[in-house]
Length: 62
Image (cartoon, rainbow, N blue to C red):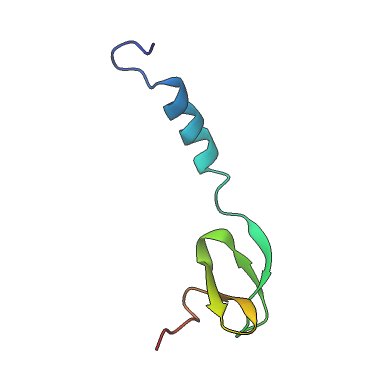
């Protein structure tokens, strides 16, 4: 168990993973045709077609 003032084992592992969370995915933006970083990824389900992927700034709902 963590002592007072220390992070638990799970919290330490979570902090270590936080740096690796934003990486280049294999998804290509439907609007601009460029690869998408994970934090910018906006998956959209299109009826009859499946999934489409956009940068969050390129997708306008509505």
